[in-house]
Image (tube, rainbow, N blue to C red; front, side, top):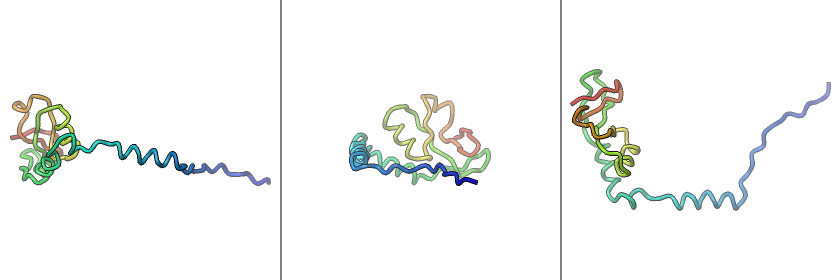
Length: 106
């Protein structure tokens, strides 16, 4: 039997130019606090809020319902699971949202 050479994939090591490009892209990323002053404090407030348990299933995995589809609200909703972002129908849905059973409640 002849020995067969295994095809083992090789990992390409980045050269200096490729390595520096990655670092340059990170340096060019915008700081959300520069774009939306005070957004970090807003996110912290949502994280620290005492939210009620779900009356449907009893879950504590609930979120505050917020209205708006603009940069700042999207940034907040993407940063914390304690916010449920909806279009302009908040009054018809409820003040809170249960992430356990996916139902709105007041």
